[in-house]
Length: 238
Image 1 (cartoon, helix red, strand yellow):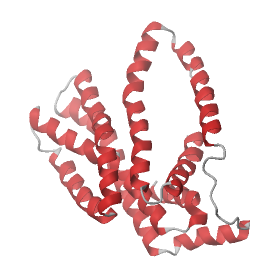
Image 2 (cartoon, one colour):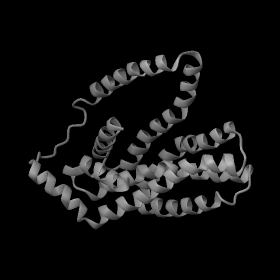
Image 3 (tube, one colour):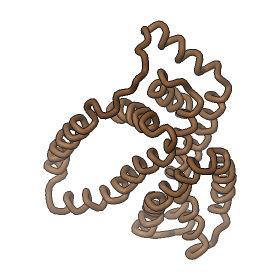
Image 4 (cartoon, rainbow, N blue to C red):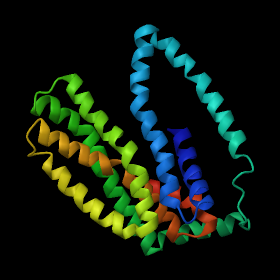
């Protein structure tokens, strides 16, 4: 959790600053890699745990973590230097406080928070609903939950591109409305075909919209608080 909290705001600020005209697309590519990993890692871990003890599997996690961390550090070292004048700590802190008085920043952060709340509810109670409400097997439940990830692999880049090309509002507002309707349809969609269609449709927006929100935050804040704004909006959204 601590490593993720340090990595995500910095990575988002780096990408959105490097590609100011294609912020949502850059974040979508970044998110697609993460979603692909989230989809394949449980399968890989299951194979490893079936072949080795969990202690060995946990121990060997250190090796790819250190290796890829080193590769990322070497690859990014000096590659994303920005021509931004360094400010004092007092000035930077004052600019961060100014974000809380910026109505657009607070409103976008709150909207992102509602999106996060919906995602947490779905991830928490969808498995319970499938198993206890619809009496699905554990394997079927796992398949449906996996669909939320897998569909996002294919939808993130197109929606990110549309956001950059046609505007954030044109993507965010209809997508949020459609997602709200889809959440309500979960309760009434009969298995198996209709329920599958609804879950696949939810997966189209489930992770994708977070990339667009990240791009919007970068659009409305100053160049000196890009990473700070991403961290602050995460705190508000949580």
